[in-house]
Image 1 (tube, rainbow over the protein chains, first blue to last red):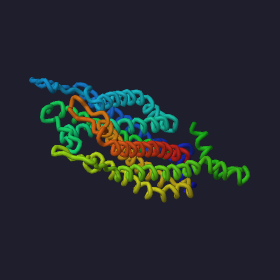
Image 2 (tube, chains in turn orange, red):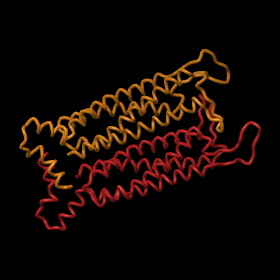
Image 3 (cartoon, rainbow over the protein chains, first blue to last red):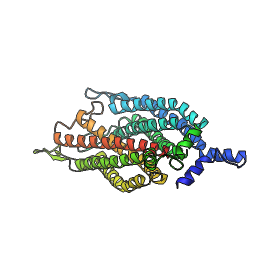
Image 4 (cartoon, rainbow over the protein chains, first blue to last red):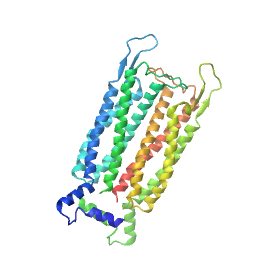
Length: 195
Length: 195
């Protein structure tokens, strides 16, 4: 086990195969492909996170009538969970932009473990933040659609259909970026393994 | 960079230092300490996950009065989010028990990358499941405590104080096990790095 691994690691340095084959092997073995895929996934996650934040931020709906009991107006900042969602997704989009240089360093220098470990730690934290925002918002969306009889919480999506649709879309986008983060975390582990 | 790494990896095989020192260095370098810490953290996470599931499962409260409008009884299975929470935390406790053998293999054979990669992948999935259950339940707990004026959802914790306290405790326990999973994921990455 140990012997085969240390042999595998030594190949890029002390190989006698032709140069092109060696560099191809090194590229696939040292995780350059993983680093490039990592970069592309981050770009996709930025799109998802920004879409989630923007959709949530623009989700407000006024109904064209009112009475003295209810204020027939719904906006994301009436519901603290959606405020948290907006802030969390904006932070995650910002983090993803800041993480791109580290991802580029991983492409340029596949042997450097430092950037990958930094990315692994912060990706794990970002995954937790992202999925907690998504799950909490999904929960409110579920309540808004279905209500709850025991606690006497009524569904509001009959009145605020557009609001509910926008918010649901934002939740879907944030779950998509959560899935990307899960892939990124596992890929960071695999890339560290290959060194 | 490359040279120093391959030297570091070769040390356990081709060192000339005395045997005991070499094995000590190998133990600290190959992540045996990380593997043992991993095992202990898993035991802690099992306790947290079981506590969360058990607390949620036993959280029901009947009030000693009723009228024709409301059924003054609250239980976790009146609220789908809490059902999901219970199922998710039970699954996570089960997964953690099943993951212990892999953790033991990592202690016995610190060089084997297979068990660590398996653990990394499943830990990431379990982290996502755990934190989504915790965040969704925390959201319902927040609504139960504070209500929401816009959507006309009223706080129920005035009536169901014991229910709310139990459910809040379960949420805290599940956030604790989420933090353990984040540590486990990062430690798996570090342990893979050291090989």
